[in-house]
Length: 222
Image (cartoon, one colour):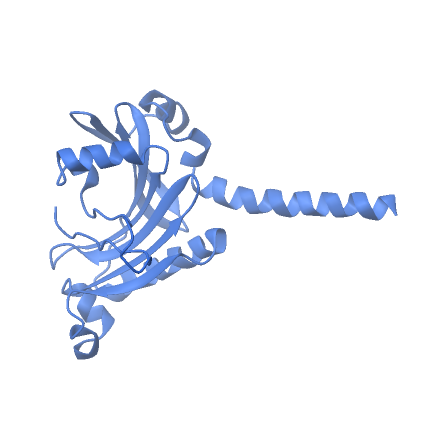
């Protein structure tokens, strides 16, 4: 009986450890921790391929492979504290279907780790386009944005596919610290179009008078 009990405990431990390692091995920033200083990130990641600094904000850039796709990994700091991490897909395709396939691949990967997102939507600039064109055309013309989001205890995840200017399709995965969200809010108020928050400025904020969560849709400016 004791053998069966301890065997069960070992099995549970192995399953738990395997589940944890999937997340940690693919997102190295989770080892570093929110609030870390730039020097701590560089000790882990090495020298960045590039960096940008403006006022209170600093970004360090690295190259990263995620699900066999090439991403630009961006560590974002405010007041020397790590507050946000972004993965920018840098694969290039002639057709929008390539970007849509990549988005689906990463979306499946995220759902395997974090489960069903609390937001999963397709946002049209005008609902009339939904029936006029297929999704690939809408994406290529900047008429459609894909968005998914997970609201976790330590960080808030958002996954986007959008066309910011009718020319360039962007595939972005971003993790924002819950603890240091106030710093993110402060710099967005100071300069909402700052380079550090370029691409999208989105976060579920507040509730409407029915108690339902209100969506803040992606900004495709900047």
